[in-house]
Length: 226
Image (cartoon, rainbow, N blue to C red; front, side, top):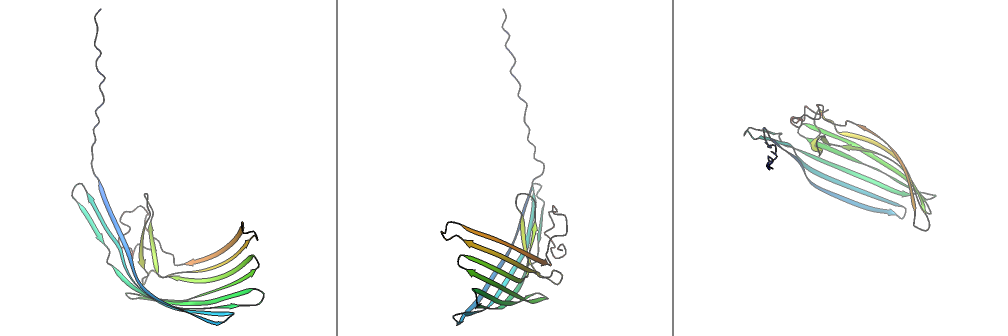
């Protein structure tokens, strides 16, 4: 009997080919230097007042974009940096009323200056609280102004956020918020209950106006922002 040696099994050859590889680096930052002052005044056992002031110096570096490929070609984009000054004065008064009611009323006047853009406005706030034994009821209303805008590019594994200032065309963001809340704790202290609701109205929100997957949408943010 003749023994036939079987041919070895041929394994398929694996070939790896790399055509193009893009390396994209983007960065942005915002730097703050601030100072503030807060004074509290105890007018009487049932009345207290607070006064404050603050000043903030901001520097924005919206974008530094660099694209490198294996073919030694590269693309670099850099938005010019900008600066802004924001400040404000605030005052609040707290009064103990009859029947366990407490009133907090006040507000803040803020101002903003960046380049040729100047904005300012009043931000009133008021709240009414009632505490009875182990329960607490609160009603509040407040207006807020934000001069910084967070532009978000969603895509991939991480959302990229770039902070930019208000401009002549990008107005400050404002909001009114109304809320009501109730809280109660059992005398034993083992359980507590919370119930709350709020309504918020916002204006001048900002976002990119181009397709969200555009890799160059960061560049020239002043004209690409709604």
